[in-house]
Length: 445
Image (cartoon, rainbow, N blue to C red; front, side):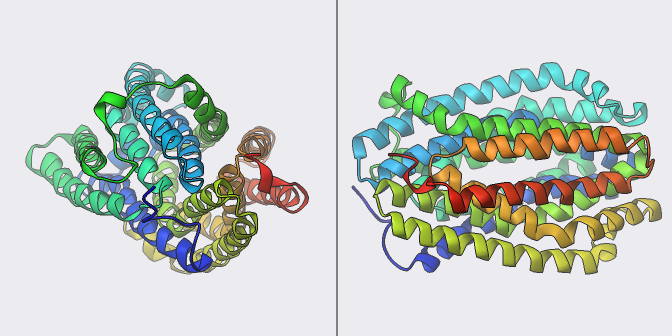
């Protein structure tokens, strides 16, 4: 088997960092999809349009992230067989993943277009922004298959250690997205629907580039159209490792919908300010997400190769690096919050709300990073149920219960801000106990 991108040999820290760096740059440009929409919409169409786009984030995450979680499971399976140098099983996993990605994308499109208006109403989206929120979502979900397929295809490449080509394709599509945003809104006067259309067209470009790459390469991970089919045993394995991650993402998204409903209660300025902070947090946390993705691949490949000591050493390095990097970023975000919020809105009240949230949450990024890093290690080891149950307990049940009890007592948006560090801390403690006490190294055995 072609071992060009293997992570089972060589310096551990160097392998993880070199793999994570393109992931970081790729995630950075992917984040530009949403930020381009936010900046252009906020500056060209005003705060009401900005609030409309911001209020859709939780719903988009809820419907798309379930299938992205399944893609994580597919990556774990592919990386495991790649590390074990089992070409036959790896190719069966790859072609099952491709068909699953296409099917999942079609489902996301249908569900998103049909149900998003009703869910936005259930989220108590204010009447003055509801129409624009619905318009944005319908266009976005009409092209969701491009996003889901892109994640499935990049998951295949990343599972075998190739994080460079997905980066190149994402840079192209992200630059295209910015140009199309301006053209759709400023030239064709298409309002928020134009921003959504620019995003999905760019997503389709990145998906097509990935597909062409996988069809033409000569390595064992290439895609053959004749081999694309569901292999029941492989689909079962992918769902075994991916379903917990998908359910975890969806459960957290549902909890975030409840949180967004609490934010909506405080009005348009609260929605705009919280939305602006969320964009800043998304950028600030990109290095941590990239390390976490690298950890999953590193652990999966090395456990597939039965290199247990190497897997444990890589996990330790990755967790420590994630926590240290996150806290440094958190301090920077907290200090520069007023300047950062002004990039998204010029309304004093919205800026104040965004700054307040930054100063509550950013200094606790170390807790969020630890939860993400340990969860990534456990998913890479085939123990995806543990982070799923932990997040269900704390990021969903505790978070929603806390807001339900405290919001009527403390009628201030600050209570929404504090629910995040609280639940991050509880999940971190639980996951660390499992990490140090349980035998996660033999999850595939």
